[in-house]
Amino acid sequence: MAILRGPYLALAAALSVLLGCARDTALAPAPTDTDPTPVELQLPVGVLAAVGGPLLPSDNPLTEQGIALGRSLFYEKALSDDLTLSCGSCHLQANAFADPRAFSEGTDGSLGTRNAMSLVNLAWSAKLFWDGRVEGLEAQAHDPVTNPAEMRNTWPVVAARLNADATYRQRFRAAFGTEQIDSTLVTRALAQFVRSLVSFDSPFDRYWYGGDSTAMSEEAQNGLALFTSQGKCAGCHAPGLFTDHALRNNGLDVVLSDAGFGAVTGDPADMGKFKVPTLRNIAVTAPYMHDARFATLEQVLNHYNGGVHMASPNVDLLMDFWGMNPTPFSADEINDLSAFLNALTDASFLTDPALAQP
Image 1 (cartoon, rainbow, N blue to C red):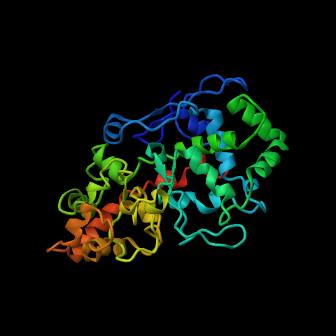
Image 2: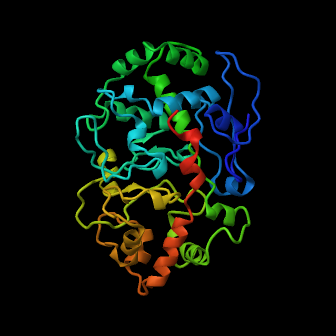
Image 3: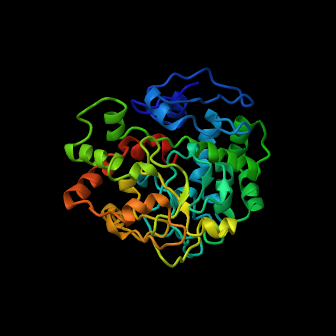
């Protein structure tokens, strides 16, 4: 079954109906509780050529039942120790499933040490979290439940709570063929929902892929030209996904207060490297950088327009242009770049009831 999302993304129609969204859909006959309905992610030619196919594990195929279950679990506060916190508490749809706070607050009031990243288009990402410490959305979904600065729970407690709920048992049976709920199945369902968080319906998409010359303002079009040419932004944020998913040091500090990927690998060459975030919906995902140091897009652009520390350990070679740029962008050019970044906002994604709390 295919799902259509927006005028460009033919993401299976199943998502829309299954998750309660009023979108153009064509549903197959209702499946049995042991025969979940497959969901196929299909992208239009232009987008597919730019981003390639998503990373879909063979042991956790997308299904209507799995995605719907994952959506419920994403907003389920029973995952936290005191029943007050869900994934959706720190990943807000209106903010492209990022956290507008600098650092998310755990159930005991403790704060995290890095800003919660957006969950947009993670179906194309292998390494996850700012420091790239896990691979695969199933592994990513496992950490927050037991993290002492987040949900502070244990998986046996979560499993016991969900197994005590007859409705959840029935839904797990429909999605995975068993009523025996454990951490593996919970994280698989959560991963399916997160893989469905696909955003390709911004003014940029309508301009770039849809051929609508009026979709972006003149300022945004000027910003796009700067972004893809003299700005060299596309070296890490090429149009399409607007991230290369690499781990890089973008010259924030000379003296590192957070080792990033280096703390994961122990390799001195990885110190100070962090995952390159997507720029899709970037206008609604402030604050910026792993440590939330920048409150506005203008501050981010000013960092690259003369603030890059080329003496930072392992600073990425792509930063050479910014660190030694003899002709910084003018105020008008910064405004144009900002207008372009705002044109990456997918309003339909941010308000889609199919992705909201059931």
